[in-house]
Amino acid sequence: MHTDIKIVLVNTTHSGNIGGVARAMKNMGLADLVLVGPKSFPSAEASARAAGADDILATATVVDSLQQAIAGCQLVFATSARERHIPWPIMDPREMAAAISVAGKTADNSSVAIVFGREDRGLTNEELHLCQHHVCIPSVANFSSLNIAAAVQVIAYEIRMASVSDITDQAPQWGTSWDAPLAEQHELELMFEHFESTMVKTGFLDPDNPRQFMTRLRRLIMRALPDKIEVNILRGMLTSITKYIASEKK
Image (cartoon, rainbow, N blue to C red; front, side):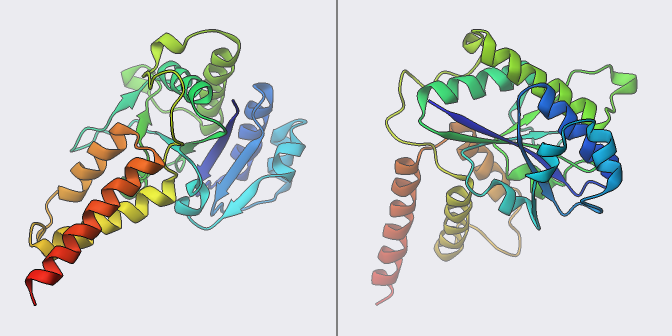
């Protein structure tokens, strides 16, 4: 079993933070850094702050959107301290690391992304919705803001500890060996688009007054961690509904 773990930084403003993140990653054996629309990269400040982790910066991938960064991933975690109108499944870093460890033992070549937001305002609601779980570092309430490199260091440390210790009992259990790969992020997004268009056609969803329907549906399905076969089943059901509607109109 093998797990690829991406550290994804969204719209990082200060290039020195990118270097600090690279150093934190290398300390704990992580190497895959993805940058979504950084303000300045590459930069001398990033290299200086990397303090010997220049190889992480040299192989970093720069993309235009979070969707691109996580397209091939099966598990996506968002780091967030934001209060939400609709609660989302939340883990602490240790629970997250254990979940990653279990996924690596029950699925071949699993791909994981851990997403960190902007220094001043974190991730948007739309970006948070792309992630199955939210990870909250339990810092003190009256001084909860962490520098992004410090946050990555905490997360990377827990992943490192999970890789050298048996803490899988703290994670959700999917069984022994899963019978199909977990669905990738782009497959989930296509399914949600399919759901929305089908529910509009049936009249169940009013596009002019959607309320929180898609958000709650997304939360429900993300919480279940569907595999590729399950996503195909759901989309097959949606296609069947659309065909039935078309036949009834004739």
